Image (cartoon, rainbow, N blue to C red; front, side):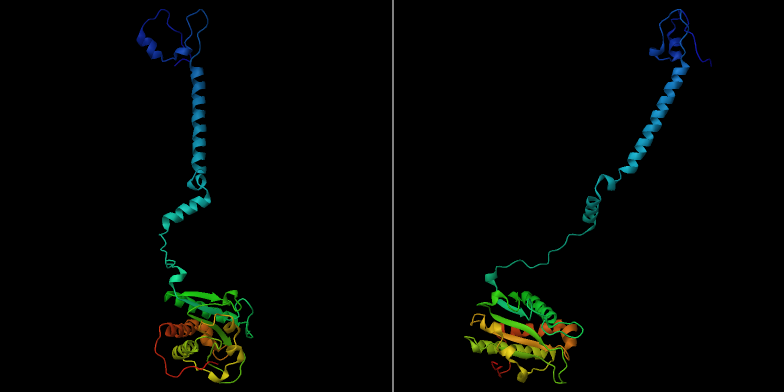
Length: 289
């Protein structure tokens, strides 16, 4: 086909004009000038269109590469959405808060808590850490039993005129080896009390239940003045029955104290529940030391 054509002078055949398929804006008015080339401008337009298509394709491909879900949404938001879709609703297992006045109160002093380490063993084990572990488990047990429980420091300001159904201070004996008889537990009751019969009963319940559960012997004759004259006994309200217990010796009784604190705590808990539930105990009362 020729690169140009000349319009037929005087042609009025509409079919012939349609077959030419030349855009109207490229058809010059009839004149004596040379014919206007048509194919070259069409080639130029074709290359421009092709260039535009290729350029648009590159841009679109780039956008699809860049704007993935992680780029449209911030990484943190994307992670949160994925976790929300994958995770199951968490069930709230915490008990419904109950007003303090509706529950009987029991106080637990974790020996040496907030003050010092207590006895320190050669390998770094401290009495305070053992006391805290046991006291924490006892508290959990009593909470499940329906009591309001205060976990107190050794010299807690709240001990001043403290009133409760009962108060117990949890301690342990020395890490040093004394002799083969230095194994077992001790219990001493408050002397400055308005109700010695209640305090005696609390001590008797604790001795009975703790010995039965832990199988540790009771050392009635080795109770020291640090126990019988325990400082908190003179700080609390005298109507509050109170005792102190050394749950074992950190030397010969170390295994049960450190490897089975739940069993130790069970013995203490059972003693407190024996008192609060007015359970039967051996007729022999524990003397007020």
